[in-house]
Amino acid sequence: MKRYKLYKKVEPVSINFEKLLTGIILPLVIVSYISYPVLYFSGTKAMILFNVIVALAANYYHKDFKSRMLILSSTNNDSGYRLVFFRFISFLIVLMVLLIADFGFYLLVLYQKNNEFNIFYFYSWLLILFGLPLFYYSIKLIRYYYIKQRQAIDFVKVFLIINHDSELLLSVNNVQFINTVNRKSSNINIKKNMQYYSQKEFIAMKTKTREYYANKHGFREPVQIPFSTNMLLLSWFSFVENKYYSIEIPFPFDKLIIDRGKHSTNNLKIFRGKVTKPLYLQLYPNGAVKLLFNDEILIDYPDSKEIPISEEDIQRIFLI
Image 1 (tube, rainbow, N blue to C red):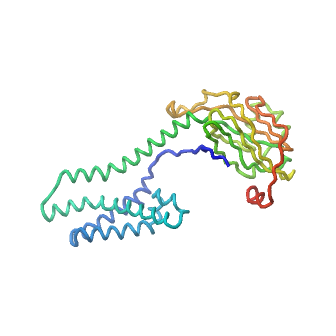
Image 2: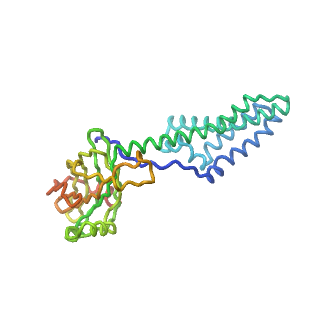
Image 3: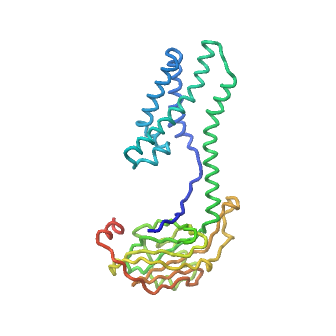
């Protein structure tokens, strides 16, 4: 099976201060204040041992903290040595954060016991303690805007509307727009149990009425398709005909009209991307397909060859 780079929606970088306070900052402050008397009365080794125990406990038992560890959350399905390795790395990260926070109390204990205060160490500690989180979120912001800018160049926003005759009961498995040159692809999630209107109603409607009607019935969602898309992949199962269809159709991207007047002005120009008018995908019996854009038929596929499929796959893909 060919691999394509699917479009992936990126969420804006945000900080939930309530969860950050209760899930990370408050536990960190509590542990640090407990570490202070341990350090003062028992010494550095006892404080390090205490932090090791806390790091182990946080790594394995603190669910809210584990959800914030990218390493742990990305390896939930791993097992064996790989899982042990990443758990060990996450343990080291937790321990490092605890020791950095406790270093300030170490400087305080030195000042209280020996009347020593190193201004360079103190400001270095403040820089690391507050600078690393700011650096982390700065990297996330840069990455977010970089991806958004690349997606604005590489993808086009389209309102995709899928319809079929109301008597033709079917389930769409896959709709995929692909640029075979750079291997970029749309990532469309087709929801099941959609309601549709009939073919006669669809043809009889004017453009504005059709858009309004389609908004209330059938699949109508904004999707991102690669710029210069040249291939459309479709697969669906017709329950009335008891047939499964899976086809590849050349896509005439050059016939799409880029509508630059509908850009949102809430974003900078480089992040606004490109948009077009709606695409209407109409499915018919015998695997026939029509794709309409701006009242023009882009694709008129009269029939499709049935693809063999087992009952188990029908149950697994279309009915569960």
